[in-house]
Amino acid sequence: MWILFLSATFFSQVIMFNTLIAILGDTFSRIMEKRVHYAMKAKTEMYADYMYWVKVCGLRFTEFKYIYVVRPIEDEEEQEWEGIVTVMRRRIENLRVQLTKDISKNQDMIKNAKNEI
Image 1: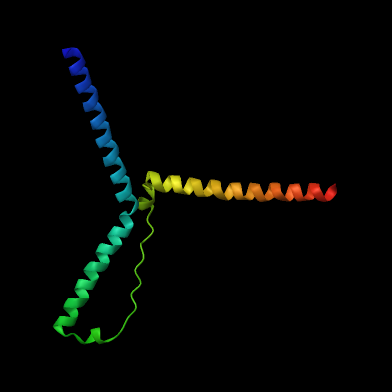
Image 2: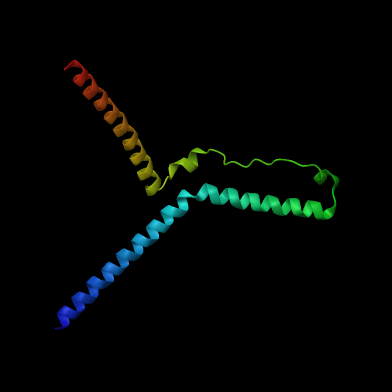
C-alpha cells in the first residue's frame, strides 16, 4: 500500500512541476514578443514626465506645438528572439498565402479544362 502511495505522490509532483514549467515558458514567450512595445511605452512615459517638468519650470520653448513620432529602432539583436507564437503565426500566414495561390491556380486549370470540353 505504501508503494502505491509513494508512486502516486511522485507522479503527481512530476506532473505539477511540468505544468509549472509550461506556464512559465508561455509567460516568458508572451513577454518577449512584446518587449519592444513595452520598452517604447516606458521611454514615452519618461519623455512625457520630462515635458511636464519643463512646462512647470516655465521655459519658453515649450510654447510651440510639436508632433512627436515614436517608433522602435530596428536592431538585429531584437530580431533574434521572436517567440514561439510569432513564429507559428508567420508560418501559418505563409501557408495560407501559398494555399490561396494553389487554390486559384487549380480553379483556373478547372475553368480551362471546362472551356476545352
